[in-house]
Image (tube, rainbow, N blue to C red; front, top):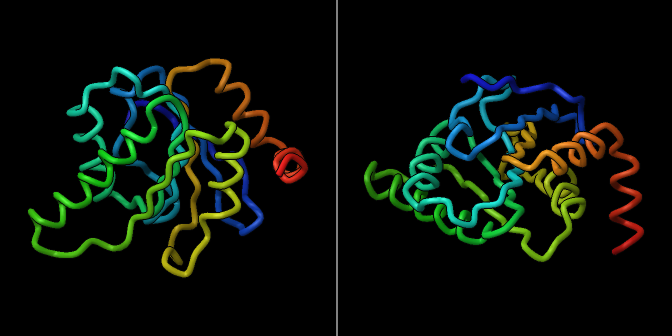
Length: 166
């Protein structure tokens, strides 16, 4: 992996929050060296115009490398969600075994703050007891990178902003 995953801190459930910013989707790794076998991924990117094969190939690999829950935000995130779901089904058909549950959600109608809040506050579940890391990944947008870093640096502020607008 060429990009460095940064450790930011811990969420309210004591899961480690990690952060990754990459310039392009094609440079987004499908395997991470994280302190937990399984992880939650919050992916913020503009997927409009991304080739299906590029998304599918990445998804096919990441589902076999510890992904337990993925929250998608940004333009065309519904399509990325559907492609990930297709990759999960194909992996199961090809291997002949049922994979552990991998939850996928898209957040087209949410603000960036709301979607990030969801990933940090609503992805803890008995179905994912070994997901002790939330990896927040941003693809391409420098302003969004700044906003995500700001929110991750102050989770109390993120919570206050999202809960007050709900």
